[in-house]
Image (tube, rainbow, N blue to C red; front, side):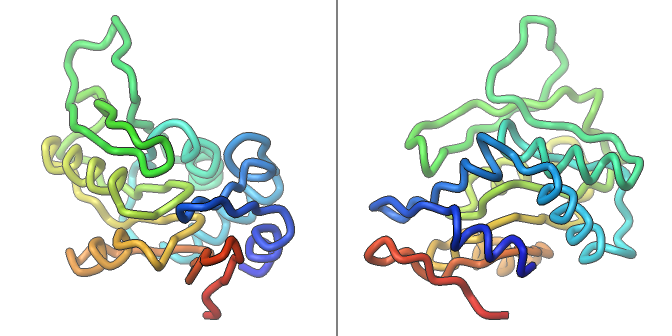
Length: 190
């Protein structure tokens, strides 16, 4: 995805500790045309995969997931980081955020993730894979089939991608960052 890689290099900002900030176009201010291009590319990459639901985690995965759901005419479910007072019948797991350095209880209603579901998980970043591991746990609790995981940006210098692939999960990342050393963004050439 050349358009995504160009945007990362143009508008992405690097911070010490392996943090890449893309809030100008992905996870604070969003570029709807880029989100559509991202969704189309994920749909192309996962073509032929049996999917009846798109799954994400709040908040930054919602935009690309909803765009995919719209284009594929599928429901989108997002795992919540706070339990609404109206939710009773739920699945729960714990997830540690790399950027926020805190642990969250992540929940999904059992009404919206079931053993009949074949899900595709979509998120903005893959770093250490903590959100992905939480989603795997929720899918296992529900008996849902995880068909694959798609990430807008993968940090190859962290262990999440290796862990997921070694676990036999199909992973598609649209842009892979090889390094953020010295706050220089080095993209993987595919």
